[in-house]
Image 1: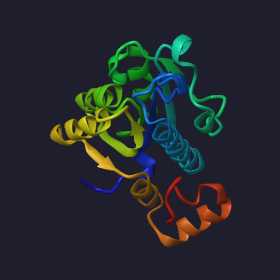
Image 2: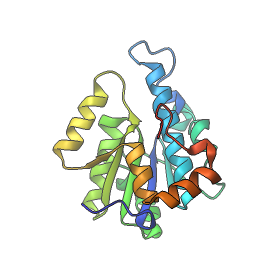
Image 3: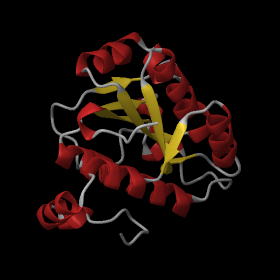
Image 4: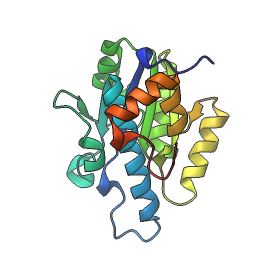
Length: 195
């Protein structure tokens, strides 16, 4: 596959809601969940800074809450946020229409849950002719389900990249990286990494 072209990319944030895994659940590594949300926030910040259009979904926000603050801080007031009723985002007509209106062919996917909504979304966008790229370290499912989701995505041939890989593919050269880091020092590396 060719490099991920920043000019042909859109970011699709799937259900990055804190209440998706409430603190009362004992089967969840809540530190890992927070790290994933922080990484999703970082990818969102980079996308916003380089002009990649963003679409956000929320599942049952009355129960799960709205998009996490470490992500929403990077969203403009114009960023569309859709209620997602079908697990695969592009299987929801309003979300499919929003993606089509962007006229971008590479859909970069982050969010929760790796083995359900992220995986269903990757398949649903690919079925519509898009290039689906999942940022594997900016996704989350509880316990072994994260690994199961990644295994299924690999089995289906969906592209998996790290947040760091995405950053360098979007920026592409040393001059761009240096200019970006100078303009956005808070985004110079993904949480948990040193670039």
